[in-house]
Image (cartoon, rainbow, N blue to C red; front, side, top):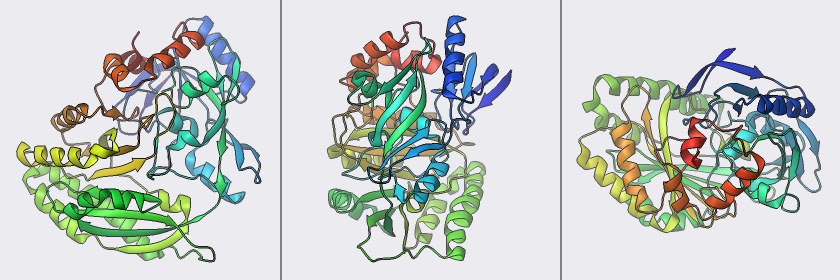
Length: 433
């Protein structure tokens, strides 16, 4: 028996049984045995979600032993990996085959199965989240069966399982559609927030990957534009010293100290944020795509992220800013805005609509409830869909109204897990009993 706790410290479970199968056959046998004993079972990745989506009640399955590239076809770009493979290990492994993921989020601590199951995404107006890059997957169900799922085989399960919050079974392997390895030119530049909002569509559509960060109580935003380079351009990464100063000293160590100061002296937050925004400096470099996508984040925080129809994002941001200005509360963490193309995955936050993501954060030592609740009230008016792994308060009735294929998903769950072997308090909340 052991204790499990997620990265942010928002969820924990004690007295859980741990299974660490060394093969897919052992995994299938373990799942079947637990189900026959009526136990609730959850696969756990890196624990990077803020919600209880992976919190085990009785049995925790660790997939650390299923964490390798098992097949790679450079010609087709199809790569099969064990479900427990961490994104950092995956990116390095793909690079060895001169391959890469077409799009990634900015954190690489998750496992591939955890990342797709919660709808993890990056940014790009013509690109989808990580789950859109899945060509096939193998799912171990409660009766010990191993379902191979793809657009051609068990297609309805495939539509449901790519973003499933772990409610259908345990993913054992994933086949990715990768692309030839590529370089990105990263351009980071502070701009007036008004200019970014006025030109949001041009910025989003005019770059392969665009996002921006805005510190509340300021007039500046940090814009990030990442674009593929022309043939013949070689890598020119950030220098070691500049990289350490920007990405470790300022983004982690100094930021931790300023948040601790904000905890003791909340009234100083507007001044701190104005100093931080003025300290933002432009930089440009070229590096391997996965090195550009990923950042190191060590300051612990709480996060809520909602997906809204892209055409409404600027309006939502204006309303959120108005609330912040009138609230009397101070928020030291920046707000992050990203985009994604519509996809056809049933429970993807971008399902059926071009999407913009707004992510709000609060330092873990500061209260967040008032802020997050106000944010939820605003995005509710725009059919906002919460990131499955980030804090929200919605239940099944709310989500059914926001996902056209919600009941299709539940029908698949009824078929593959009729006894709810893979349920936990979170899935019971978001999918109903």
